[in-house]
Image (tube, rainbow, N blue to C red; front, side, top):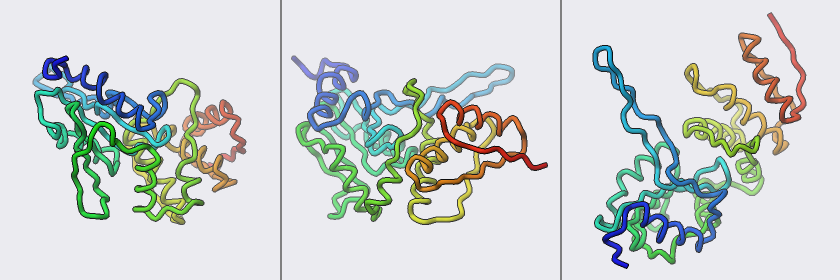
Length: 248
């Protein structure tokens, strides 16, 4: 087989995915191919409008569902091993992951933004791709995450069985909030625009804090009944205990 004749998708199927599986990554839970990041900008020209090409990472790797840890960008074998690195770095910055990889099927260029030895970028073979546990341990050591904090930070997201993944900015908001609370922060502010999923984001934060037993009582306030009703509906679906108090 001439690797030069393979498409980018062939490189993913024949070389990158098998390397991830061999390293211990669960392809059903920890690996998302063509992970959507944005729908693309809306371009308006007079009375016409169109949407630019959306942004999708070839691979997003998750330590646990909802907890991204790495990005991989793939290129066909006519490109160099690091040809996808700049694109991968941009995607990695969007979802705030410390580990970024680029590959053309020959191996990986590994960008480790928290490397202790100062070697931020190194080439590794397909056989040397790090396991989920190795990357997570490096991240925890960098962030000085204690075992008790780790229990909170890695608490499962609520899932209704549809395998719906929050949007990348929702992941950031939820995970950063949980991490800040685990670190002892008492006052936090999230600002989200209309239509960006504030209720969903707030519910996932509440769910994870409650399930991890970090917080036993949580007060949810809103300026309109319909917003409170949405949250109550979700709580009832998940058997999350609550009491409603309306004050006007």
